[in-house]
Image (tube, rainbow, N blue to C red; front, side, top):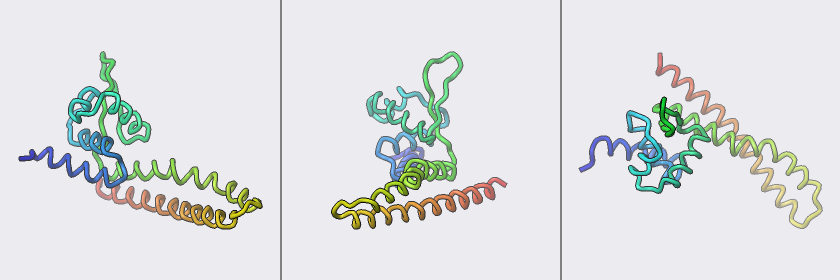
Length: 162
């Protein structure tokens, strides 16, 4: 029979996985979310059954996109990992990450790509241009959606804390 903690951890895992994270990332976030204290790479490797190097690489990625936090304890060389235990904050971080790594570069680079395509004499360039322009329009829409979603979520978060 599952323990309450494991049931909760699995529920968090499913929620994180639904946001597009891979198996290991979702598992690590769920474990950290349900643990009261930060954990080391060795502990995470032992708990998940994944290799130390796989856990280390995944934690580097997750800390890079600010989903997990890494710290050192006084007198120790080991890194300790924890996660923000506020799902609204985690969701905002995930949206900001998608905006920063997907939408912002597209909005920055696509106007130049569109202009090059417009000036191209290559066969099929008109069809390619339509595809690129549609993608650009979708990125503009996503940018607006992400900004509104972050603003709305932060408003709710603020209301919940008062």
